[in-house]
Image 1 (cartoon, rainbow, N blue to C red):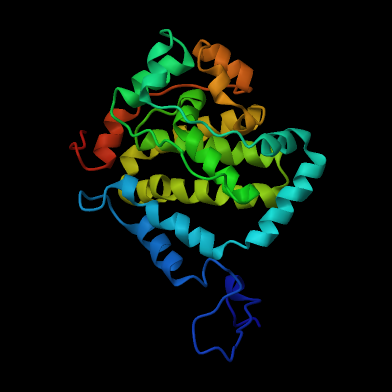
Image 2: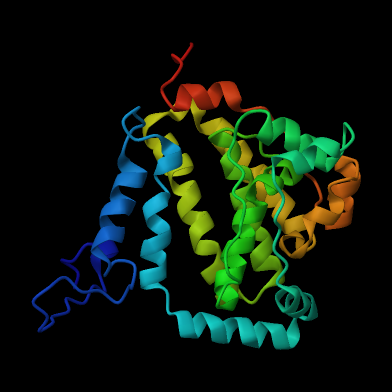
Length: 275
């Protein structure tokens, strides 16, 4: 034993009759996920694969990996002790707004800010004209997608690559604050995968930008840890309100906006890095 380096002690070499790679991790057992993770955290940015396209395959992979029945049981258990979540899922509200809907809001309101920051900048609004989601997890994912751009505004994340870090970390921290750890883990996986490219990749290849990424992480975590379960709010009711009042009504606290658009263009390779 003394001949074994300290950090290598305790390793047990396991064997298996399997003829293929196998692990106790359902994520590691998924070949496409292994490849995706390796690429997403180790690659440098390039114009051939825009960062916004990188998340598209992961939703399908997570659906394949996820134990759907177990997740539904976790939701049911949580609803028994979490009246707010139970009411939210019982209503299962879904928006059907379009671009013209936001033209009516007064300057300074949440709805007007959404119009200026999202619609006038030609970001796409996805109109959800789909059948009602079949499961509780379906609805959670569905509603999170509807609300993502609104949560950029509420949590203080601008619409840039570095700005994506803020609402993602805010969600992770907030969900772990207000849900059981196991359920929070299940619904936070996608957010963690979202921020991997903005954190690990930045540290590996763009160290001058790391302080910006770190600040975004800290800002997002502060919002999530200090706020009410804002992911259960019906933001549509808040659109007419001034932004700060909308945040207060949703229970969002300590949001601090930082414009990361210029440095995000450098991160993406669209602008040269300055000294």
